[in-house]
Image (cartoon, rainbow, N blue to C red; front, side, top):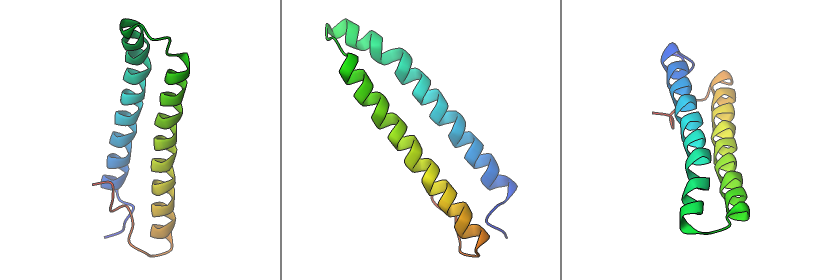
Length: 81
């Protein structure tokens, strides 16, 4: 069984949808929450945004290197399931 199968592509697309949904909810919810707390959260919101995107980039790097390892013959895509 190859490491790039229709199931791994399906799993990757599901993760992509989940990540996009979480980022959208965070961008919608955090300004409201900080407004309710009475905090001027412009800097805090930017820090949280940077952390969220850093996590997304790390995930993308893991996926890319798993795909490269798969193409070179090593087992990959094991962390997604």
